Length: 304
Image (cartoon, rainbow, N blue to C red; front, side, top):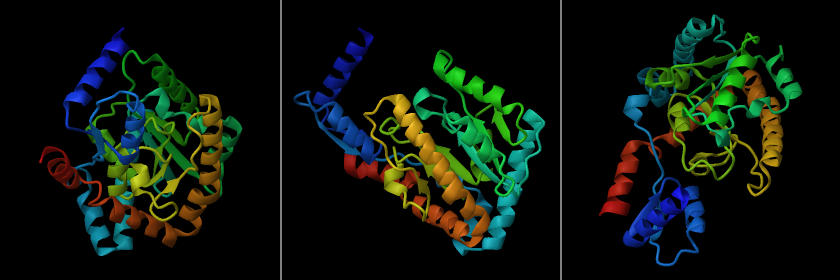
């Protein structure tokens, strides 16, 4: 009854409005398909979400990017990793190494976002996190809604699993200050939703502004940004109509393959290429995904 009432309310709104907006191009496509059987609804246009560059981008990272100063960038990134790892030590007692590639998964915990996708195949995951030639560190952070029990279970599972691993950590207190440290101090920003479920997503935008490379499902805003292997790494798309367990298996296998064969070797074996990807990511996220562009779009495309 509640869902029916919400649908009727939304249909009424779409009929009264002259235009409505989705929050990414893919979201507009999905939304149009959702409402195609309801006559008289308005046009749905995409206005992709964005983030405030001046608030989120570290000033020294910005300066080194503008001047393409690789050594200065690396020095600053190391400083920012130290700041993040101080937080890891304060919360978990673990000492993370700034010379080790660091993944972060951080956002609201929800089932479709699949924070635990890396743990889908524990044998492959154990091999990934114990590789002495290519060491990695992984941090999870975020909050589930109080009554989202499935998301709470995922969070608790990650906490319990990571306790005995020196290179895994789950951080609490996910507010703006911690979010900033995670985006500034990470090398990789993981994004693993079931495809078509993420309307936009914005955390990867601010991560990219600070030199964290997106490794992502091709969902939400990512299709508008990604140049696979040049400014980000994107998993092959799977059929979103498949059962969830089939999607999870295929996406997890693709994620392991991508990390093992492309992402991690590039970071360690080809640092020049890695730095090129880092700067390309900043080039391509600014100004296309800044709040200035978003506000301009709303004015010109929706309100004017």
